[in-house]
Length: 214
Ligand SMILES: C[S@@+](CC[C@H](N)C(=O)[O-])C[C@H]1O[C@@H](n2cnc3c(N)ncnc32)[C@H](O)[C@@H]1O
Image 1 (tube, rainbow, N blue to C red):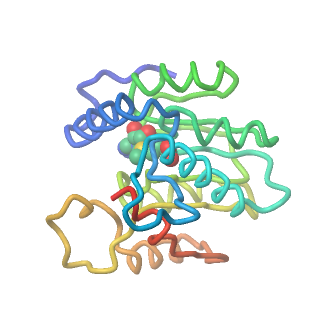
Image 2 (cartoon, rainbow, N blue to C red; image 1 turned 180 degrees about the horizontal axis):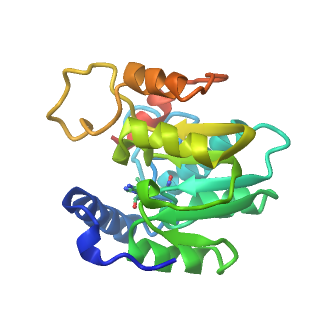
């Protein structure tokens, strides 16, 4: 796949990439998500980087618990630097990842020992004739417009395939200024997915288990 010129990457994505680079430097983790804090930290407990890494691994396990048996191939959209991909790969899933950031690409290849294909592209521009049993968005749906997400996922899924989406969501469509205002409004996302002929099979609100990282 051709490497896109940096001028093809929109400005907000470049800023987000810069923030992600900062986060990578701070945590030295192969995950770029907030983690799943179970058990929840007790009042006054220091939230250390070691504890964060445990929570991040627990989040990957949580993702896996949502993947139905029989799933063989996964497209990890906005795959970051490979933590989730490695976790799923060593458990027997055939994973491919994509993200529009060359620095993440470099880390992803290193963290996955070059065992997992990586595509340097935005999801919106991902041209493939392949199909997958599962399309995964782990804290990456918020960067992609709902129509692109729904239509792109529908196009890439094999018949009977699943979309697994774990991310921050907005319940209030009027919240438009804060740092999470790029997150999708749950009702809009659901309506767009239904239009693209998805059926909701399982949902869980894990906000309280993610909150320690906010
Ligand atoms: C918060 S990170 C999550 C990384 C990883 N999924 C995880 O759970 O650790 C968001 C990811 O979405 C990617 N991303 C941003 N815009 C994207 C787009 N338009 N298409 C695909 N990925 C995108 C970022 O480069 C980054 O890899």
